[in-house]
Length: 137
Image (tube, rainbow, N blue to C red; front, side, top):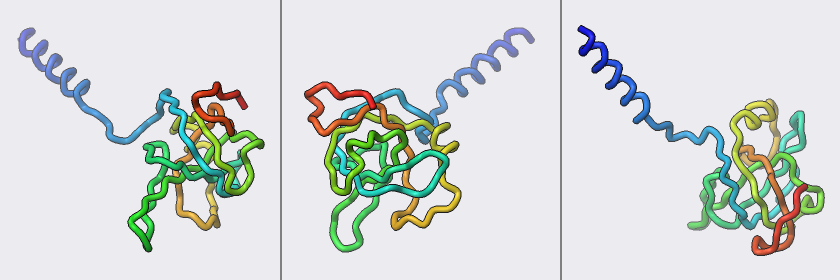
């Protein structure tokens, strides 16, 4: 009986540890990516800013153009420095997805032109390229 219990526990533990969740919960990975400021996003308890990433990234919500074969990558950003908050400003950003922050700061009512997008947290942003050291907010 003890062997049976041990085997069941072993297989149960193996099944639990082998399961993966395809949804991103949060990440500490912070990659420097080029982005463009679009506008302020929906009103929330903390300012949110809509940006477009200029290359594909899992940090963004992808939208395929209805008129061309182009895909655009948008995200709403918390803690974006004022220095890059100007329409069409291109900059470099290191950011991360934080599910708790997204849940906490998700707007309840949004009349933005854009559909809902992922909310990410800005770690650093700069108009200088990634090769140069980015400065903290």
